[in-house]
Image (cartoon, one colour):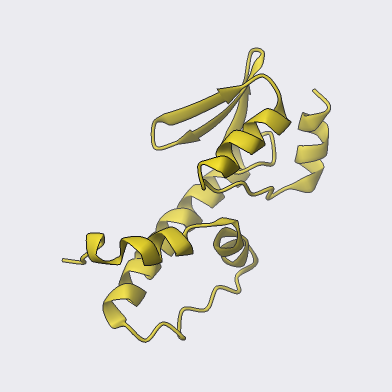
Length: 116
């Protein structure tokens, strides 16, 4: 069993928009990670993020990872935890202040949704 708790800081440093962008573009390279257990943890996280990103491409109409619009609120949802805001800029500020991933994966959809 992998020791996720023993690598908490490394995981926090790994789970960010740059990592998601590298996954999205197919250029994430974990070969430089020498600690084999940490590499396995990062591979597991990569796989989970890749599945979630694919689902966002298929189902998300905003072009922003984990973001949707519900009535007058913009919502960021991560594993049942929801952040709501009245504007997209306010939502982005809150999400980033909590060190969560803010990643625009489709700029065309983002442009359309930001005008709403």
